[in-house]
Amino acid sequence: MNPDINTREASASPCHALKPFDLHGLATYELQSRPSKVFVEDLGKPLDAGAGFADWLDSLPHQLAGKEIRAACEAICTAHRHGRAVGIGLGGHVIKTGCGPYLIDWIRRGIVTSVSMNGSAAIHDFELALVGKTSEDVAAQLPTGKFGMARETADAFAVAARIGADEGCGLGHALGRHLAQSACRYPEASVVLAAYEAGIPCTIHVALGTDIVHMHPHVSGAALGEASLTDFRWLCTVVSRLKDGVWMNLGSAVIMPEVFVKAVSVVRNFGHDLDGLTAINLDKSSQYRSRVNVMERPTSSAHGTGIELIGHHEILLPMLHLAVVSRLAAVRGTTLRQAA
Image (cartoon, rainbow, N blue to C red; front, side):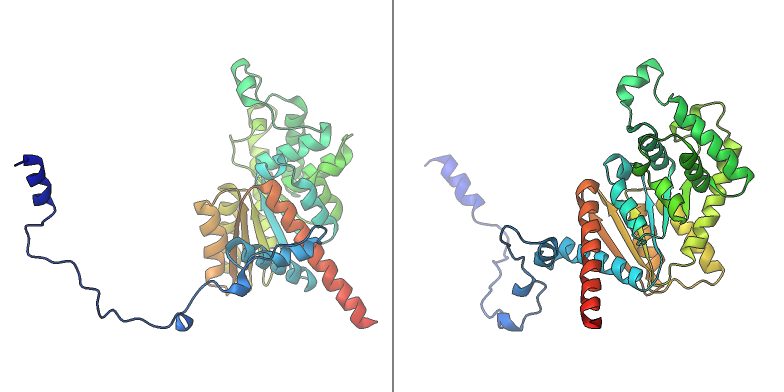
């Protein structure tokens, strides 16, 4: 007898007394009666060539991100139509990926009512406006000690920090004024300048030691800190007006979510109502602080809504921008037809 066959037969017959579970008698129900999460009317609808953007947006599946981008669009449009605040907080990657013009257009249309950003976003914004380029090659510059040594960038932040601290206007307003008075080659590229010209709050929130301008001796840490702290207090005023409004965190994983949640605590300490707040987080990946400190904690006790859109900034932001603009135009056209 082959010993290998005996071994295989022994392994196929368990030595214990248990038997396979008998499935006869399993209770079932009709499929139609079962609660379900996906319905045929939720499916996407392919469109023919030449379809408009509004048609494309309506054709998206009513699932996951398809529902979220519609909800984000509706929240922004509703807040704008009712005269509520729509604030944005952004990180540097949003500017670097070319999304500034979409924010600038929202500002000029009166949709965005305040702008807040971290130090890197302000630096990239300034450099694009002044000379039309930003984001140096760190790997190439670092070995020679040239990384972060651009003269004009440091000079601008030294001046803006001093003015923002001395005059009490804050870093964002002072940098906007500096840009307005400078010979910028591409002023139309600056979110900071657009906010300054529109007369809406622009706040810059720095973490000392994290930005290239902090390496320069004439950039005062005391002035930067005072000017940025003033901007935090301006942000508290912005947040105090977010009842039934919208806050969008765009591409900031740490600084802006942390700043925002502190401002929320301040305004609630003073008794301000944030009911109806819609908090939108848009980033290339889901992060703990932006999810918890923006979407969840500020809205959980305010009868608010948290929305998260995950994907490339350079794709999602143009889509959301056009969705909002198209929706507002459609509503405006309907209102005019009804009035006529």
